[in-house]
Amino acid sequence: MGRVYNFSAGPAVLPEEVLRTAAAEIMDYHGCGQSVMEMSHRSKVFQGIIDEAEHDIRELMGIPDNYEVLFLQGGAYQQFAAVPMNLMKNGKAAYIITGQWAKKAWKEAKIYGDAVAVASSEDKTFTYIPDCSDLDIPEDADYVYICENNTIYGTKYHKLPNTKGHVLVADVSSCFLSEPVNVNDYGVIYGGVQKNVGPAGMVISIIRKDLIPEEPPVANTPTMLRWKTQADAHSLFNTPNCWDIYMCGLVFKWLKENGGLSAVKERNEKKAKLLYDYLDQSKLFHGTVVPADRSVMNVPFVTGNADMDAKFVAESSAYGLVNIKGHRSVGGMRASIYNAMPYEGVEALVNFMDKFEKENS
Image (cartoon, rainbow, N blue to C red; front, top):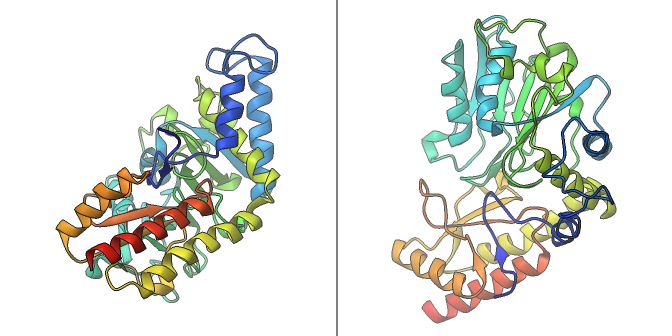
């Protein structure tokens, strides 16, 4: 069997060019006689890899010098705790609940302080983004927290909330590097890399330096969750995920070689339009999200019949379209069409959907 079109929400599809480069270098990285997976993280060779990766993501995103870029283990979930531990000086934060991951982050923050839910879209199964133009944010809130793109439910903030002067913290795991961003709009912007940036096993946290406390406000914050620990050591406090940093570095190079974030945004919107246009005219399939809040990365859809959904998932897999089943909490189908998903993959999906609809109408 050849390469399939992988619509997994994460771990997810990686660029073929990146995989080929990694395969070619796996035994001997740039003539050093060893694999990246074997070399010391204290070596000059690896220092070059991590320095170049940081340089390239700074260039891609336009990250100002007053922000740290940290390559951390533990995934985004661990940052659910690290964020309040490092930022809750007043012991209070505002959370906007637009899906399971924002809800989990909010519940985690409640362990360490007063985490207030200032808006939620749970009343309609997270199918929309609430109006965030005039929220009742507590004056003494240390930050406002969002999950910017909701992998499970397929919604996206196309306009950032009005935080009324408070620091904005955003989990961007499933829209990371999918479009240009103004990093200055955020105090903290972080994402697990396994959806749109690299293999599973790491989170990249971009943190404004003045927000990194000398001593975390939450007592007994573990050494590894202190942002200062990681920043002072330039992500090398302990053995990092060397292979993941290398792979993400290859993805950064791939993005730069293919026009950067403006070009990738254009390609992503073209792919999403193809799929959403089909859903909007289909008599069998329909999307589940308010059109104005649709994600460009994750597209959930259903037939309205659980048996028909299951049949579609089974037959699509045989057609070389894999991991199309929706999240267990939602059901139906979900196509994650990240940066590395080619336009031809979405075309193949739409063609199969059309074929399936004609055969099952």
